[in-house]
Length: 502
Ligand SMILES: Cc1cc2nc3c(=O)[nH]c(=O)nc-3n(C[C@H](O)[C@H](O)[C@H](O)COP(=O)(O)OP(=O)(O)OC[C@H]3O[C@@H](n4cnc5c(N)ncnc54)[C@H](O)[C@@H]3O)c2cc1C
Image (cartoon, rainbow, N blue to C red):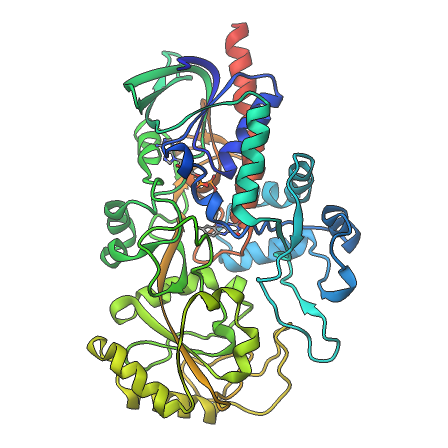
């Protein structure tokens, strides 16, 4: 057991591992604390699809990461410039995102993917993000900004970073929960209180990085901050992100940022487990709704399924589903959509019928106790079909093929549901992570509510707030954790070194 180190990193996900590696690189002794047992280590990071959102000025820069393992001529993908990234962040967070943190995130994004590449992280096209092909060219449509993911997704990313940490002699204490922070009389953080297999104790240190996630796994905190209905939602990832150190840091004087009443939540299969299952990873997501329609238990549509590409809408749609009766929705498709459904739909056997009437009857038989009536479903499909118009359908772009006269309208990809067989997939809300968190400066140093530094205390990843409000562009979570993780690790190591000199 280490009871005196330079830097303690709390957590063992992407944010923590990048911080630990950078602190080590700066010459510090580093100890990581992981609340989970070793076999469940790695937090939400291990569940991820491995998508990183980063800017790149041209396709050559993308090619350099992919090491020519992928054919750029077979895909529709444009350069994702810093200004496009900023537009996405500002648009999706409704301009509430901290401009300084946003600049750091964007400006360091490509260089951070190169750094990860140097550590052995491999990259590939994010094929399941959009498997659609352009009608004329037949090229694969990849989502701008989220075109690339780590090969082997979250598990491989986690494994690679753990291997590098082990090689660098970063110590990891498993089944050890950080429970509090200790401060010296001059205000510097100088220790972390823990509860490990040997009972409670304190680890003395020169710097601390908090990288232990949000509070999405804790039912009571969800109810307190997000509202009553959120106590019952399913958690897409780890069960260990309880927010205890977030609360502890706030009690110790840390400021907060972001909206504690908001979160990232997506449509997931209704029969998903209550917490993430490492065998399923991100496979429970059901994100092909732009190619069909979504109705609640009363057969009513409640969201514009075609508002934008799914990776710009999926993170807020979970909230819309949570607000529906029983927190349940049904995704309806016809045969035209079959080849566009993400591969992960194949984990579920849908309700299937040759006519909309038969499908509606099956739905009533299965979900009648939730208020589903076949006539409601049938009439919504009829009304929707009548509101569509003929036109060019292109899943690789916002094709403007919208409905007319509906509330809500469907803005893009609105083809009538008219080709048998018809399928129905029940979905519910899966919470991914919470948006409210610790206030940090551009150097990842935690600050007081008024913006003064808390010396020696740094934070990164989902425990921090200030970047995402209301919505979220896919891939920005891993990117945030790594960009600020590197800064946090280097910062904590520098403070610890200064402490040693004093
Ligand atoms: C199913 C799923 C798919 C996702 N896909 C993507 C994607 O493709 N791209 C993307 O950008 N984002 C994705 N995300 C979001 C993503 O997980 C994160 O933004 C990122 O991985 C978070 O990293 P983190 O290190 O901050 O937190 P985590 O990876 O959750 O790590 C938190 C760590 O802290 C530990 N811990 C918690 N409390 C304590 C404590 N008190 N003491 C000690 N240890 C503690 C946990 O055990 C864990 O090891 C996905 C999330 C889920 C759930």
